[in-house]
Every structure is written in structure tokens, then in C-alpha cells.
Image (tube, rainbow, N blue to C red):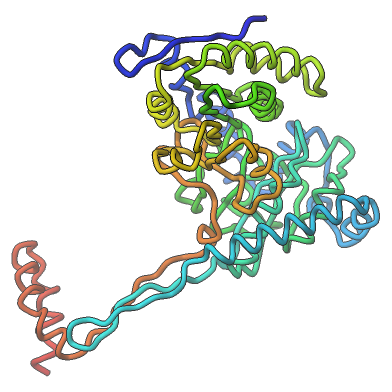
Length: 432
């Protein structure tokens, strides 16, 4: 296998690099499958959910089996090893600290005549969280989602995650869910989980918002239920871009690219942009060398063949422009004075600054949520935050003097827009 190396310049983009940038955020095949399943769930509720749990999760369940029991949570607590318990507590603490620090505060200003204007933030009552459990049990995603909902003050946190063929949910996921604050846990994965939470069934009440990462089918299902529920963002197959110069260690650059290639869907993307041909060639060698030693070798080789690109640019400035066009989920900056380039980033889900900040630190422990926009949607969306679990409401409290001062403005707009009842509603207060 040979890793592709391409040259790129803003005025000479060629054809290979633009084609690599234009990866679809949604899979049309997955969307067709999701549409049919969601309609069945909307019409037939629990019966349809059980059908798809058997079809796609490979387990035959009764309605009474869907919800994880307290006994299972207790068993999970006993199963998890002490080292992971300590690691989980550390992640929980760091994510909670970051979330609390980032919460927007209620605020107000005074109007010109003594009234008040402002915004207040109120948590959702009931949210749904999807936790992947197929190719890899994403225990870290529990802390990167449920913890934020708990900090925001959400009272009902519903979690769906698939079980294995015996109906058993990964005990590490269950342990993390209990610690993070989940209030209901269901052994349901994929499209059927999204449909169940979005539409509600006799067994599970509908939620107000669904968050969390997932593969192509989960992402397609989330897109299709938008409007029935609120959503977070497009969080599909993982991707990484690295901007590096000759100071970057080739071994570390390759290791970081591979860290995202191993997720296993086959749709992952890995992009290296550098102004050093020497580094580009060394990284290509390291990618193949390191891939041969990793547990998920087959999944990685698929991404190296179809989803990996190394690009050589004339300057780091050109490289940053290319990274902004790519709008990656994860962007690492491994150049001289990397902090100087942080302000140049216009489109990325999260930025990892300097050689001592591997993307895996963000995936597991740093503090910000690792639920991030993919498929180029980082040009439109931001990563998940604690405020995604709260509703923002603006408020206005005019005094008599405020309304009197603005009455001519209200009447002028009412006249131009043909909305005389609007104007009358304001004028009436001075006539009664």
C-alpha cells in the first residue's frame, strides 16, 4: 500500500485535494434505510423498536427487557476494575469543571427609561443521549454528554446504547452512566434508539432533544427526526487534520492520524498538511509501520487506503487555509510557536495546540466534550457544550416611560407592515 502525497496551493488546487475535502456529511443509503425504519417506529412504537433491535442489534428482547435494571448497575459496579474507577472519576471531575466554567450566566441591562432587558437560561426537562457500543464501547462519550446534561440541571437524562447478542450492556458503559447521572438507560442501538427517543412509545416517553455521536445510520436518523426533537450537531465518522512543519516528530504525527483511523466505520478521514516534504515521507513510512502493530489493523488499513491524504504546501499559511477549507472535527497544530496559529483557525470542531496535546487527550480527559461536528460541518456547527442542554429565553420589562418613548416606532412599523393590531396593542395602554 502507498499513502497518497499531493501538492496544493490556493491558486493550484488540483483535483485530488478538493475531492478529498468534499466528503458527504450524510450517507444517502443510510438515510433511505433510516427513513423507512423511523416511519415504522412512529406508527407502531414498541413493536417496531423490538423488531429493529432484533434485526440490527441481533438480540431478541421483550418490552420488559429494554430498560437496564438497578441490579445490572450494581453488577457493573462490581465488575469494573479499580484502575478504571479512578480514571473515570478523574474524567468526570475534569469534564464537570470545564462545563461549569463554560456555562452562560443569566444577564440583564437597563432600558433607557428604567426597564430591564436580558436573557435567562433554563435546562431542558428531558433529553436523550446516544452512546455508541458497536465497533468500540465509547465509555468516554458517556462523560462527554451525560455529565454536561447533569451540570446543566436536566432532571431526566435518557440514554440508549446497544447490547451484545446476549442482551448484555458493556459494564464499563453502565458504570460510567451511573456516575455521570443518567436516569434511564435502554439497551437499544442505532436507528431504533433515535426513533424511540424522538417519537416516544408506550414504554418510553419522548425526549425534547437528542445528542451524542454515532455512525452513518444514527447520523441519518437524527437528521430525519429534526423538528420532532431538537438536535445537537452532525457527529458522524471521526476525522482529523494535522498542520505540521519540520519540527513535528513524524512518529507522533503518524500515531495521531492512526488514532482516528481505528474507529472502524471505514468512513474516517485523516489529513496531514505540511510544508516539509521530508516530514511527509517520514509520516507515510510511519503510518504503515505503526498500523501493522495495532489491534484494529484491518479497519485502519481501510482508512489508510481510502480516507488518508498527505498534502505538501508551500507555506504554513497556505496549510492553515487548506485546513480551514477542510473544516475538520479535530485539528492538531504541530508547528513552531503553535499558539500563534490558533487565532487563524476559522473552522474546526476542536483544536489541539502543540506537540504535547494529542487528540486522544481531548477524546478522553482534557475537559471539553469530544462530541464534535464532522463531514465539514465544523464550518457551520460547534461542538457540544453544557448550554446545548439549556433553553435560552430573552425577557423585556418596559416601564410606562419606555413604552411611551418607543410608541412612535411601534406605530411606524405597524403601519408599514400592515399590522394595525400591533400598533393598537401599544397605543391602547395610554387610552384606558
